[in-house]
Image (cartoon, rainbow, N blue to C red; front, side, top):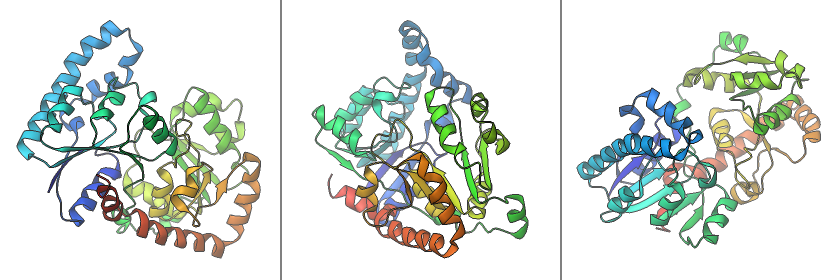
Length: 345
């Protein structure tokens, strides 16, 4: 069996899924259109939705047609049995129809199609899917409401392999001398305020925030957060990112407002990189983790007590992380998840 994996390569999820399919005996070819499209064009496409439709339509013909032509060429060359797609990968309906004449179509959702402005066809594409993997039970309910029946709530992608050979030195621990770490972007809208509000509750501890420039807008409301902030431009290199995580004791994970019930995938990344996530509660924690949940925040006023307890008790913290690692290895390692998912195809 051959799989054509269409997914961005800057997420570790792509390599994890590729390794998972390989482990269960599939041949996999991974293609990321971004490698053959200029970064300028990709940046323009992220913002083009702000312009009137007449301009967007001209751009769509120019930008998306070229991407889809290449997708078809890759498909014809590889002749896959399955096309496995992360989000929508700028696909057009006619391209999916073309794929479907010769292969099964699986989508794994990373974003809700109702809130993904970069491809107007995302929701429509899902109607051609043989299987849709949703990490959010509410997203799944929304799709089922529309008549889609082939939706499963799951996540294929826990993987420690990319981080195994990265070691932390004493010099690293001196450089990243903090107990609590957060690395991420800010937002200029209400999402940004919510994230800043959440992180501000950790400022009384030995906390470090590496973030983008959009955090700056909110520092007038949260001056203590500014004292913990260091500007980071672009993606942090993987080795540096892993070292940061392993030097920390806790990693606070806020819930993305677009994820209604589901887990933020950073929860799995934290466990794989070796730091205990302290997680804003969502309903699907019970669905995914059952009795082995990471520490959860159900109210921001709980943050101080929960954090203090975990920081002062190294054995408790390390034991919880160990249990979570073992659980994720058994339940969400890619080859295990993919076997479970393919049974429903």
